[in-house]
Each structure stands twice: as structure tokens, then as C-alpha cells.
Image (cartoon, rainbow, N blue to C red; front, side, top):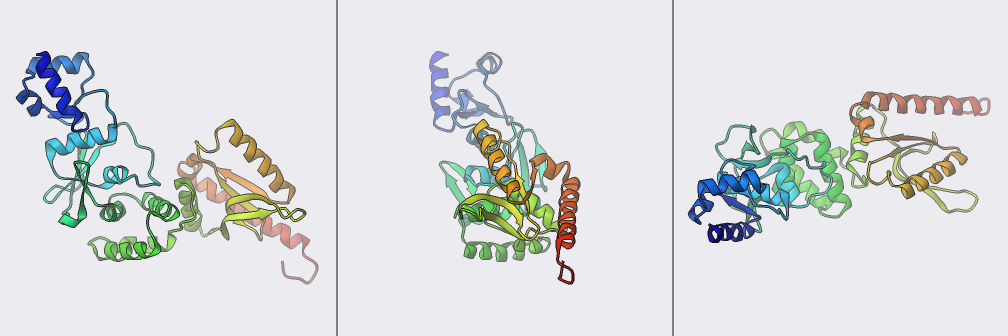
Amino acid sequence: MDQALDRVITFARRQDDVVTRAQALALGLSPDAIRTRRHRYGWTSPVRGALLVPPLRNDLRARARAASAVLGGTICGLTAARLHGVPGLPERRSDEPVDLAFPNADHARLRDGYRRHRSTHTPDEVADLSGLPTSSLPRTLEDLAFLHDRELFLSVLDAMLRTHRITVADLAAMRRRVSARRGGGPMRPWWSLVDGKAESPLETRIRLLLCDAGLPPEETQWRVRDPATGSIVARLDFAWPTALLAIEADGVGPHSEPQALFRDRHRQNQLVRLGWEVLRFTFLDATAHARRLTETVRAALRDAESRRATHSPRGSPG
């Protein structure tokens, strides 16, 4: 049994710490031994018929390998995007299914550990990622428009542009391909909203909320200088310089450390000294409290307009 177990473990290490049940049996491991490894030694089955053999070196690849080994198909969608290292994606959930494409599958049918999508890939639209048949990066980006919402899709495109993973020409070609696909019509208004300046998915989400509410920022990534010294005081996520109003997107990671909190407080004090009003919003504000966010910004802009009108010289425009 020890020799059979060694063979199975060695075999699993060659394929992302995954072995199918059929492979384990063929290598000499008995059904009782498989049950023992599952109950006592932490072997798990994210997909029926596949076994993960700990320690896992890459949980994402292991689960993608398990689904692909048992079910076949092409890894696509969010799973493919993660395997390609696409920026701008939401944090991966522990229960996130593996996305698999099949030419004759029902639309988006969810099963334990995986989700089947009906989709056909040509040979040049499939990449071999170290043994994992995965939709190519261009096809993966296009599929995100169909498989996910506008916010996720545009967060990815913003991040891809900002990190120079795609060019403006790539974006134009992608737009043509998506528009030509069945169901691509509703995405046409999205393309004008792409902005490669966004530094986080939260910034993209807030910008979309503001645009939807008829409150597009005058500037993004706006540099504020101290008029006395000429030095840069801050670079604002969103700004209305005519109203001296700024919005900062506070992500959990970048703004939670003590040093970051100190820097944020110092720069906000400097901005207030120069007459700016600074509003700060988190991911929760942009999702669960989206309406309150836009109402707050609208009120702040209205107040700024009132102040300008009050302080304008008589007879001059407000």
C-alpha cells in the first residue's frame, strides 16, 4: 500500500497536486485507502471523481485541474482570467466555482465545484497554461463582458490599460469582436466608460456610479499643488477643481495600515487648508450604500455652487 500511495502522490505532484479517482485506483490505491486519505489526511474532492492531495502549491490551479481532468472542456471566464493573472478582479472566494466551456452545455449551469457555460472556442482561442486548456487572454477578456456585470468588466479593462497589458488599439479590436458576437449590443455604451487612469476596482466602481447619476468628475488623478511652494500636496482620485471638491476611494488594503492612515490624514489636512472639501468612500459605500454616496456628492456640489454664488462680486457670473 505504501508503494501505491507513493506512486499516487508522485503522480499528483506532476499535475498540480491532483489525481483522479480512476488514476489512483489504476496506480494501486484501494477504495478503502482513498477513503482513509480523505477522512484522516485532508484529501478533498472539489469535483466528484477528482482528489486534491495536500499540501496544495496553488489552490486555483489545483481546482481548475481537478475540474478539467474529470469533465474536460475549456477553462474560461473568471477562472481563466485569474489563471492569466488579469488585474482588477474581485478577491477570490473560497467557494468560487471553476468556469468551464462546452459547445453543447446548457447556459451557466452550476454544479458542485464548477459552472458549465455553453461556448465554442476555435483552436487559436485556447491556450495551454502549463497543461491547463484555457481560453486565450483576448478571448477571456471578451467573455467577461458576457459572463459578468459592467462593473467587473470595466474594472478589468481599466486595470489592463493602466498596467499596459493592453493598448488602445487592442481595446478597439476587442470592441469590434464583442459587438459582432450575439448579445454584444447591450455592451456598446460601456466602451466610452473605459478609463485607464483608475488605480483600483473601487475607483472604477465609484466613477461608474457618479457617471450614472449625472455627476461625472471634472478630473481624475488630479494633482493639487500648494500655491505658496509649488509642491504637490495630493493626487486626488476624483476632483471638481471648480468646486474644490475631492473624492478619495479608500480600499481596505492600501488605506488600513498605520503609516497609510497617517499619510492620508496629513494630506487631507493640507487639502482642507487649501480650501478643498474631501469626501472618502469605501467599497461598502459604493455597493450597499450607492444611492447615499451619489446623494452626498450631489449635495456637496450644490453647496459648493451656493458658496460660489454667495462670494461672487455683484453683477459677475456665479
